[in-house]
Image 1 (cartoon, rainbow, N blue to C red):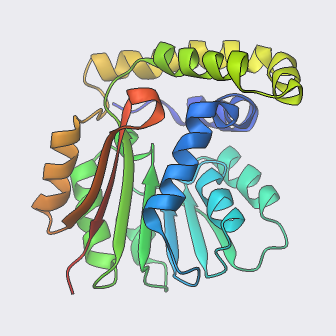
Image 2 (image 1 turned 90 degrees about the horizontal axis):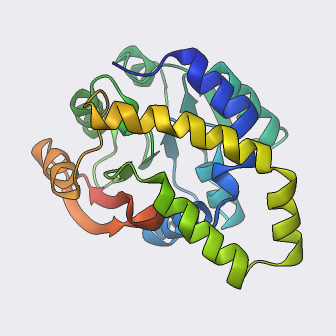
Length: 242
């Protein structure tokens, strides 16, 4: 059973961009996603479970100028993402539940690239979603998934603390201190996510399981990094055959 919509609305409206998205392991993950995709810049991209749009932001900062469609079920996430990309004609944010097969079916564009960063684990039917992505993705298209496998936020916080102590600028440290309240709330909320993982109520697949499920629907694996986000998640890139 997934966490209730109200949980994600509060998380995305007040907490995510002030805590998770500012942490060094998360910023490293965004850089890894851009580097792994190595896009030309004009591809049609769908970002599933876009949240507040941080994958889209990373792609734009890397020079992507093709159409990007972000799909998010949380109204708070949709509102923040639309604010973030206001005035950028190439970006469209759609409110929709990806567990509903009509959500992707209703989009006229056909993606050449699909990204799913830390969303698949919360899907009610992740195997069905993988199959649907395979169906809608253009032949030769890329499907990137980053999915958690180990519910250890403490590893992420420790990596961020080391970065703050050894590398961060005074401005970085000041921002961290200013938003410390949001980190405390984030830690509490992530305990709920971790509890769901331990109890098997969401899909913290092992790297081998994630690879197997993508290959099961027909994708050909091109890259795997099982130690992203401070060794707690797995990044995979696969291609739909021509």
